[in-house]
Length: 282
Length: 295
Figure 1 (cartoon, chains in turn yellow, purple):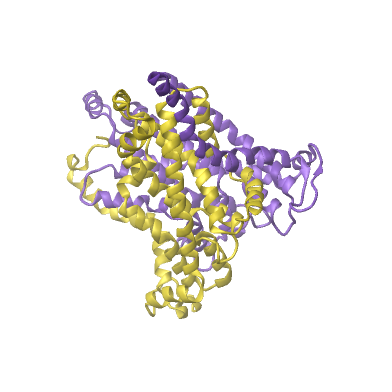
Figure 2 (cartoon, rainbow over the protein chains, first blue to last red):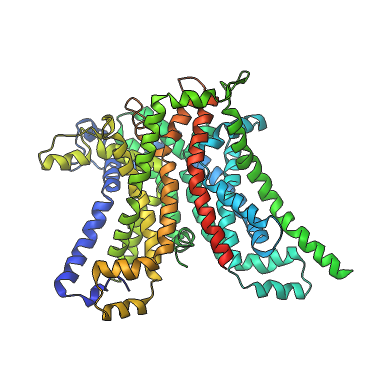
């Protein structure tokens, strides 16, 4: 193990490490702690410039309620779910199939196709922006959560295909050959042999894609406008403009917007990290 | 008969599985690239007739001072964003212990990456605020006058990059933590017997084994730096006086903003950005190709 395990070091080093660990975490998360502390202050403190002193009142419930009552926050959150969940289902579904096809079959153009999926995944968003917007307008889905979802499904298919293909490629191929020898059709091999084996990959991709899509801002502002279709990232930007100096409400809104992916992360940590670090180890 | 039926099923099957994915990816990703390249040769306000201008947009671009400011900022982003890689490694080494509660520490250190860039941006706008921002309060303890980082042309880009480094470092950290987990213990013991310690050990024994993690950390950091749009839009909207723009932001601004819809000109900026990215994409694919053949 690298570095030397702390149990094997001298007593002062060990103690210093144990003291410094929580302090370093505190420093690392300081900006977040600050925003949280602000979100529970009363308006009086904000107006009086008391940002860092002891709060004169704790308005946690008032502030968070105010965000929901005075702003379309609930709509924004709902829109985010309406985009993120179908995108997860769509992109994972499509990429199970593409990943399966690219991993199991050897055919002409397979590798090139795989490379196109990978390359597309790295493309700067801006080169897609104008055509995707025009296409959404012509389909009649501009400024709807459906329009945003369709784009996300298509774009995320690139990354998901890369992920799934490599995962399926690492499965023991003998299983598929054995099934073929039994006369099982290809579609049944996909459904009854491969899908159960790639459940961990499906779980990892689902949490990752959910987080990516929840946090997307660029496409949200390109393809939607207004509370009836905007997800929470874009909504937060408009709220920031409206509130101007009501920092306690802006920070409460930020915390609310950050919460779903954070909860998701803590609930599904193992899968999340497995997904992110696929390929970090040979 | 049966055998040939099997065989044709096997040649047909991949295409049936691929079809829906290819269809979606083609209409939303591949085709738009070519459409954008095409639009970049026109002058177009997004509504009226397109007027063919040939390389006109590109010629204008090369005389446009704002383009160079954006390009320079892109280079700064690329360079300084790379700090996330060594910083992530440093924190990973710091946290790669087995003391009580370390799992929770690791998750909490990773935390900034899970949060939307919009929120990270807002958090740092707050942090940099010259009147009450935490940074200036701390600077004040050392007798330094408040610096309005985001309102000062000299510092603004660095300020936004620093904010962006926060989640990116967390990302690199998690990659390295996973890598460190898989480091060969016997090699370390052998190196210890040879008296390798600290930095020498890191350089000659550990880092070579962390190569896959380093590769991915660099790839995601390059991609992240070229996608710096969100932070800039939230924190400064490109200001002050356009000094924190990058190509991605300038493109958006030209295409839909109060300056009018200049889709053709915007597209030409996007094409330049795409070409820069293509260098990396090609390198990445080349490496993938070598790995595939090596299997």
